Length: 223
Length: 223
Image (cartoon, rainbow over all chains, first blue to last red):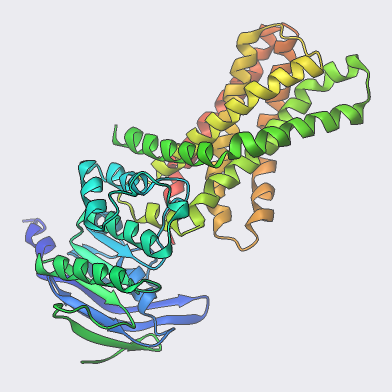
């Protein structure tokens, strides 16, 4: 008798499960045989010097790039075969804000709420949360880097993803914006979202995170 | 229906960016007008010659404008890493291709209206059969926009994208150029029946490249 796949496999408690993941750019290894397991609802901070492979690892988990060797699962979905399922549930926030200069702050957020078929009001509420309600109708071309990052954070808040991936989210931000990023991370973690952060900066106050170090593309000792 | 909705979101976004950046009117129209006037000087003052070569000049202006418009459609995506945002959106990537092609088609048609008026006035091009004339420009603009949108994403990954993009696109759109010029010439002379065969070729080209784009665009976007 044929055995049907067990649907419960997709709701395991492991949010990220990477097995022997390697990524080469040409012949240069950026990530080398990384094994990483993150539980659902857990917060993990990746630390390491520039060029350690943190950003590449985050982009692999986000399915922006594929591993050259190895594999694994994210939120119970296969890293290669189920990319769209993973993308529907996770958000990658980087220092590149991915904004359109000629669109307003609200339009920039709404492009994604519309594509994800979320209620349009979520975009308004997210901009209110990051303190940009008054500037919602202004084009981001005239925004400072801190304001642009806030719009990117608003886009993330509007999505409310199960897995939040942050690559140096506090880079080039002023103190107020850093605190905002920190509060968004702490809030997401408190609501049971899984968080993976690559950062040189301090872990936000109130976030109970496991620290994992990376060097030369390899996972080092956990602190 | 989801594909249509997502296509509309992308097309609306691209058109808003183009209209606010005044790229279509601010760059393409002066470029096309200058090209026509320069060709006009090159062929001399003879009205008969100008009227005879007008369809070819018109299509050359549309072709080069299509190359510029298609490149521009991807520049706004790469300025701040926005293309990766679209890649990571859990949508059928064909919607990005169709949305961009729709926006570029709309820009080209707006340009054609202005440039056609210019050619009719300056070169005294006759308009024997308006319906096939309009059909030729609609079908031709779709063909140029589709090829430009498909190969725009390929060129984005190349370091020398400014040089590679025209080299990829121009040979492929030769059938559009030939069929467009012939259909315009015959329609201008009032030979509707003879123009139909060329319109059929343009329609077939559009169907083939829209189908190819829908099938392969997602793969071209992926790492």
